[in-house]
Amino acid sequence: MPAAQRTIVIDRPVEAVFSFFSDPSNDPRWRTHVKEIQAPPAMREGARIRQVVAGPGGRGIDADIEVTDYTPSSHYAFTVVAGPARPRGDFSFTSAGPASTSVTFSLSTDLSGFKKLLMSGAVQKSMDGEMAALDTAKRLLESE
Image 1: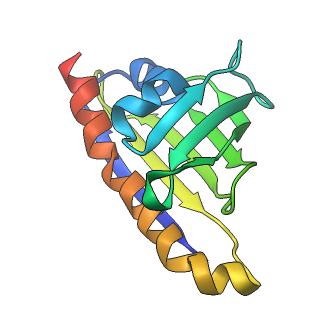
Image 2 (image 1 turned 90 degrees about the horizontal axis):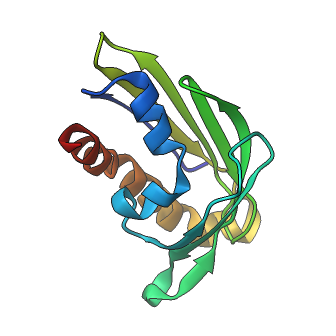
Image 3 (image 1 turned 45 degrees about the vertical axis):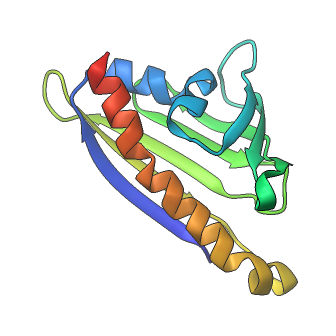
């Protein structure tokens, strides 16, 4: 089962950090493989986010998201509902001081049968890339 988790501290207040990560329009700024993204009219549990990510050979792959938890300033979770792999993602936000936030981001997916055999390595590599991209988000947030 491909999975990844990382915690990072960002020198910005928790409200600003939550707002950044839960606004899909920010994703292309820190997740370089996002080719297209369309935010819903309002972020809430059950909202759908249209997303296209770069796949093999750079071709676009639908990877739409459904928000499964939206608790302002503390928790944002989602499930990918389109595409060959359908990971679950989870962001947890806690104050790490008056102007710092600890962000824990985790991804996991269940692959079985043929998909497990063919896709596990590529899906794990993609998840590891998402974790590394947190450094870009940190730089962006701390420079604002």
